[in-house]
Length: 341
Image (tube, rainbow, N blue to C red):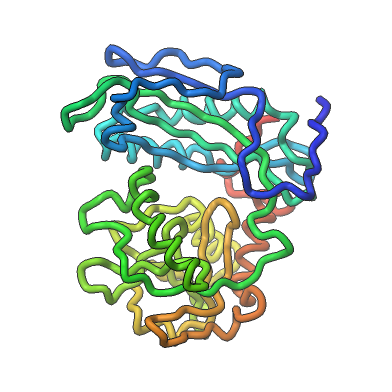
């Protein structure tokens, strides 16, 4: 199979239309068999449920070429499970996990020419999403839905290497108690846009959101989970019912325990504790781990000494081990790597 003539090493993290995408429609209480199509356009009635009441959910995962030349994805079953949970919370029909993984496989196979070569630093990003498609004028769930997956080749999240981030403690709330913070719904991300634009204007890379009840506990950013390392190399991740269950974070926790022999705590993390940590990172699909060098709490600077200029040593080990597993350089736990070609 001949690859597309793309300058892989200079790709940005942006959308590029590819040849095929997957579409399945839910009507009369059932999903159709689904199909691949070349048509990238979505045609909707002006009163579609997604346009009126934001009834939409999504996922994000990557396909890439391993060191031995295989095309694989990383734990797509967990993306399927999380999308099932998101659908149930927004009163949408579940697109079964098994069909989700099959649809991912079909899209990657159909666009294999867009999967970047090993060592390029680029990957094929997949975006599964679902939305209410029929007209809805009263406040209620839609009756019809569309599930789609498109893909696009993207470059590394950090051009020119990973640089530690400076983040600020936000005055905005990311998610309400008993709300939708634990699912991957479009409405959560829409709510974060003003906060992130405001942070960028003030010179910060990201926000740190606190629990809305007491504003004393760390939750997450607008699109990533936090991971902290203590001075005695214990890995600590915040625990809350309104934090999105990141697949990357769960994988890093396993790697810390089982591959690196580190002690791990998943617990509430107090804002007042931050000054005592040695390292901090943001973890997610796009960059795996983004190191944090400085946290600013309304003028008070909290500097993470191990991450001011580069990744801290423990964060670097976690990053190297997980990416080694993903790229086939380190043996993966059973079921983590889904081989497509």
